[in-house]
Amino acid sequence: MKKLINHPEDVVRESLEGFSLAYADLVKVHFDPTFVYRADAPVSGKVALISGGGSGHEPMHTGYVGRGMLSAACPGAIFTSPTPDQMLEAARTVDGGQGVLFIVKNYSGDVMNFSMAADLARSEGLRALNILIDDDVAVKNSLYTQGRRGVGATVLAEKICGAAAERGYDLPRLADLCRRVNLNARSMGVALTSCTVPAVGHPTFDLAEDQIELGIGIHGEPGQRRAQLKPADEIAEFLTLSIIEDGPYQRTVSEWNEEKEEWQDLALESPPLKYGDSVLAFVNSMGGTPAIELPILYRKLAQVCEKKGLRIARTLMGPYITSLEMAGCSITLLKLDEELASLWDDPVKTPGLRWGI
Amino acid sequence: MINNRTIVAWLKLAARSMEENKGYLTDLDAAIGDADHGINMERGFKKALTLISPVEDRDIDAILKTTGMALIGSVGGAAGPLYGTFFLDAAKALSHLNELSNTDLVLLFESGLKGIQRVGKAKPGDKTMIDTLQPALEALRSAFAYGTDLIEALRWMVQAAKEGMESTIPMVAKKGRASYLGERSAGHQDPGATSTYLLIQCLLDAVESQS
Ligand SMILES: Nc1ncnc2c1ncn2[C@@H]1O[C@H](COP(=O)(O)OP(=O)(O)OP(=O)(O)O)[C@@H](O)[C@H]1O
Ligand SMILES: [Mg+2]
Image (spheres, rainbow over the protein chains, first blue to last red):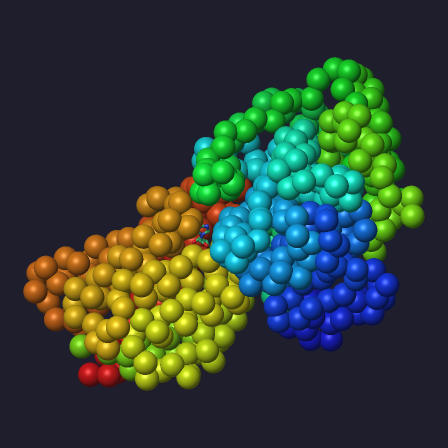
């Protein structure tokens, strides 16, 4: 293992210490329990937006704390979901009197820990709702699996909902918006190399020089299948088509019903993309793929979209949701309407994403 | 007879076992998950040991509750809420007991299992810790029904847990991270089923060392 670290067990803490020093004007960090929050929190009269998950995906989520995006982020150990006490303390700290929306990626650990946190927050009289992000088309069905994983759409949901919270959306409206972003987004990723969890010390999986892993998540977990390494054009085309040709996706999620005061199963469907749609195209590096390669993928992505009648109205390109040093990429397409596009354009000022301010 | 000292001894052995098997559990998780299970479990039981030391002389439910809270607050991942709930729900079912009868011991595992199923919604055959815990509980029940003594009953339980753990090898995962692999998850032993087996083995060791 060759990493710029001191001791494997100190990676998360020391990284957060340096992070809060570097961005002291934007964020503060709290330890035990650990969370990063807006330097100006609590912002009164605004719904607080909290996300979190295992560390190792930087800049997500801590890099997205700040004006126009998250109120707080709760980092777990590397690739391990955070614990409920972190989310609870973060909620207490950033609640501005309008409640908290938890944006949760659909992994069994995250779902359970965030549900417990929301229950605890409500038992203290805070308003709290959870919305799941599950946009990874590599997972085919929800019947025989945990359901689709939350990947690239998480970044988009955090940006768009952060803008809406800034505009004064109330909690139920913000939850609806977040759900809508998720239902209209789809992603697919590929790994060229594995990654090494510092505490483990060796790569999570072995991948031969000429092999790639298709349909990976963001935790160095093995993907859908292995394939031969191909030119960028073929990979970009495969990823883009996997998204565009994905049919309607149904699943049942558990959401808190504020009127009935209970968790309720909700049947949701993601409609497929269709000819004439406007989209936000997001080409993401998994961490190890250099910036020069991403536009090569984007170039093909744009050609495929054109052929399929999709108009790319907004673009995001870079390492925004990573898996440590893994080489590889993911593509996310989000169907835009006027509201989503305008929220996307709103100013944002965070360590990881910044424009308009 | 199991008393609060046995429970503390169990948790101490569990912490040692998680430390010793950290690499093994993490390697199992690397094959079908995300290579963190052993690290999570070691961290959690280490934390549990420090938190239970002030309550070691209290009733069994206080020790179990402290353990559950420690695990929920430090393990993370899926295993944190699941094992945490196991201990919390077991504690609720056994309030104010200093010793456990055979029936109480069955109740401990029964309540814990129900808690794991409430939180995780997994069924037997989904390739999870349930596949170890459920048959282990059955074996404990049948052993007592058959009239065996505590140690013998726990030996039956460990044997069933081992078979349950190994039964996860050919299974295709339907819950947790491994479910994303579909058919590719077959051929690997489930990490959570393995840590559950280790915990049950530690209970037998604790009881044997006390008698
Ligand atoms: N829904 C569930 N019900 C019961 N057991 C489960 C469930 N989901 C996962 N598990 C068990 O948890 C084990 C994995 O625990 P681990 O600590 O590695 O969490 P994880 O899945 O990596 O969590 P995270 O998704 O947050 O990283 C699996 O081997 C399985 O036995
Ligand atoms: Mg794991």
